[in-house]
Length: 311
Image 1 (cartoon, rainbow, N blue to C red):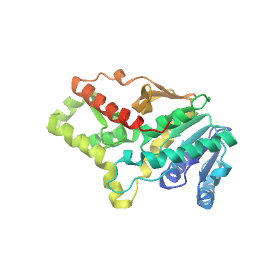
Image 2: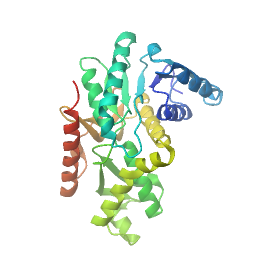
Image 3: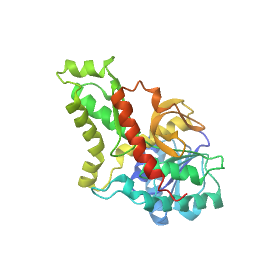
Image 4: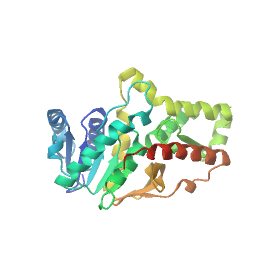
């Protein structure tokens, strides 16, 4: 457990609570606070989690309404409307932009956090919205980006190749959504190129495979939402990993949502540490011409959506 570190979570829904559970199990902070528009929901979840804290390093867990928010060292924003079955993440834009503006007003009244991790969808556009809203402050803002997409890609590849997921090195960049880009040409598996590893299993890295794996990654959330109403567990694990990297000043490189050009955020490799996320740039990967075109198209999608923001 990190001494004196205070992590706050805004939104005590499925994603916020799952993030809290993962953070507790990783013993990342000394105090964890959940806040929600429905104060009793946050207090109830916090009390439930607090009863397990004696086995998890004795972390203090508390909760309350948005009018009780404290900034904290790291604030995770999961508040907002959730994605409906079959709904594009970008369709959430207008509803959740208003929610983030309300949160910023609370911080201005009650104290700013040091680092903010945006998880609210559409995460790339919401990250840009909050960056604009907090411009001129000392708050570092980035989003969960394509880390979850990357985990989904590695999970799928590990099952195909019969290898441990941590032996798969391939990332997803661009939009956390329907234009995401799986970087397969630079991928590696078990010390070999991904193409060689797939070939050893009799699988060709051809157009049909690329399309299939992209559909698996992009469609994963829709499948889960159709079955259980929302995604929560894997994103909670991803959020805890991001939080651990920031709190521990790890300098770990993860694909999160950060500026890729002025006014546009997208999933891109970043160095995560105590000051937030430092983008390495999408060209830090050896992109093939095909991948470069796909990334450009994904950024085009996000540029158009960011242009719709009210600020």
